[in-house]
Structure formats: structure tokens, C-alpha cells
Amino acid sequence: MSKKAYLVLENGTVFEGEAFGAEKETTGELVFTTAMTGYLETLTDPSYFGQVVLHTFPLIGNYGVIPADFETDTPALKGYIVREWCQAPSNFRCEGQLDAFLKEKGVPGVCGIDTRALTRIVREYGVLNCKIQYTPDVTAEDLEKLKEYKIVNAVESTTSQEIERFEPENVKYNVVLMDFGAKHNIGRELEKRGCRLTVVPAHTTAEEIIAMNPDGIMLSNGPGDPAKNTAVIAELKKLCDAKIPMFGICLGHQLMALSQGAQTEKLHYGHRGANQPAKETATGRVFITSQNHGYAVISDSLPEGAVASFVNGNDGTCEGVDYSYMPAFSVQFHPEACGGPQDTGFLFDRFTSMMDNN
Image (cartoon, rainbow, N blue to C red; front, side):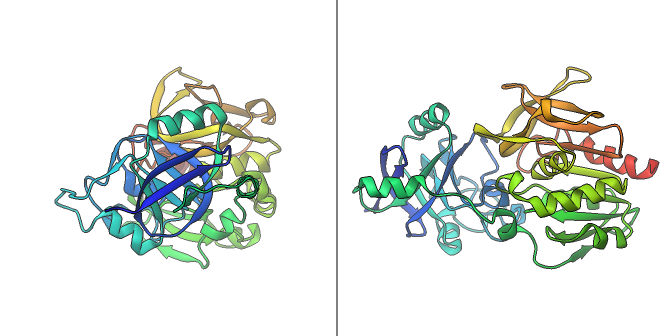
């Protein structure tokens, strides 16, 4: 018989479920993703650092564990909540089961929870802190402690610790990828287009990057509050002043905007999933995108010469910025797509064209 597990929310709500994965208590920020596929990419996305991830799709694990689909080697999330996990996966690429993978990586999971009811709570109240534990007992002191939880040192905990280099067969461009918690597929998409990659830690200075003589600079995704990265923002301002072609994704998009004097805000419950609409402001065309972020650039705070190139189709928040005074642009969503739609992969081609023109 499965062991009982309990998900405690900071507002005092307690959900009873069954434990799977690693057996350990954990505290994190509860967020939900609406993606119907791509659970392996979700599990290994560094942008979930410090968070407990809730899947709205009811069945998870049906195609097992496929290491080739991982976005990083080690999950950064704190816990995993699903309605049902498949104990008999079926896929020709399958190399293991979800339960065993979570145990190996030290990630506790809870299944058998009414995930629809839980999602409705997050939609109404916004992002809540939560705790996975193995007793239903909760005191007022426990809840006060739970409310105090904050995600700290997010980028520092997920960035690479040393410089790495990747070289495709036919090199056309020399690109520096600033790693704030990068997904592997950003690098794969650049390599497909002939980019020699130099992946540098987040704390790398502008002078060090400029000395590498890059044709372009890629700013990766990553976790946490973008405004907390003051040292990175200062270095990005210097890089922008150097007028090197630059492309930012997700956190990279936010950090670039902050370096130009814009502001960011925390969203009520964020955008997470592979079915998020992004409207291109110049054409009115809507793209279905993969997203994972809890913060957004405030469009009204953008400096002169910077315009919102995409807005979210649901709430109108900023989903991209074009800069007329420097060879740079950014998007809040994930054009590298995995997992999710490939509708916006052309943005990598726009980046290479920008390097050609420069």
C-alpha cells in the first residue's frame, strides 16, 4: 500500500495524496503548467528552481524517462505534483520509469491529488508557497514559517560553473551563450545554424565576453526574480553599449530590458505550458508558444526606441521587445520549443541574419 503524502499550502489548505519519487519533506513555490506533453523537459528545466511543479494534465509518465530529451542533467525543481503517474510506460525510446527517476534525483512527488481543484486555488489566490510532508498535522507556526519561504540565489544555483565550448561541423558564427540556467535546446538550435558556442557562467564580465570577439550574444532562460541580478544587469548594459548582435529568451529577455532602464513585475500566477498565445504587434498574427515564467517586463516602462514586439494573447503582458538603437531583440517565450510548438523557431534565423548584417 502506498504511503500517504500531504501537500500543505500557506493559506492552510491541505491536500491528501500518495507519495512517489523520493521520500523527503520539501518546501517550495507552487506553480502549475498546462502542457499536455513534454513532462521530461519540464522536470529538467532550470527555470523551475525552488518551485513545486503541478501538472494540470491528468496522466504523467506514460512514455517513461528518455534522457535524450532532458534540458539539463539534474532537475532544479523542489517537488512534483500529478493526478496520476503511469507505472507501465510504453515508448520505443523509454529507458526507465518516472518514479525511479525522481528517486534517483531526490525529487519528492505526490499523486492522487485533485489537481483541478488545486489549480483553481492558485489561479484565484496567485502563487502560493507549499510543503510536501508525510503527516496531516499543521500548526499556526508551521504556516507562518511556510509563508516566509523565498527563492534565493536562483541564477547562481543553475548557471554553469566554468566555460564550455561546442563546435558544429560547419561553423559560420561565433556566439557567446550567457548561461542563466540555460535549456540544452537553445544551444542545439544555434548549433543547427552553424554557431560555434562558448557557454559562459552568468558572472562573466562584459570585458571578458567582448575579448572573445563574438559575432553575437545569446542570453538564456533561467529562474527567479530578474531584478535581483543587479551585477548581471550592469554587465549587460556594457554589452548592449558595445552594439554586438544580441538575442534574449525568457529571463534573458527580462535582464536585457532591465539593463535598458525598464522594469519588471511578478505575475499573479505566471505563464507555464506549451499552449500560450503570443500576438505579434506588427502583424496581429498569433503564435502558440511554450512558456515558463513568473515575471514580466512592464511595457510602459520600456525606453524610447524600444517597442513591445509580442504581447500575451490572454492578459496583454509583454512577450517580446525590439530595440531600434542597437542590434538586439528578445522574447519572453521559448522559440527553442522543447517541449512545445515550433512556430517561432524562425527567431533563431532572425538572430543569424542580424549577425550577417552586422
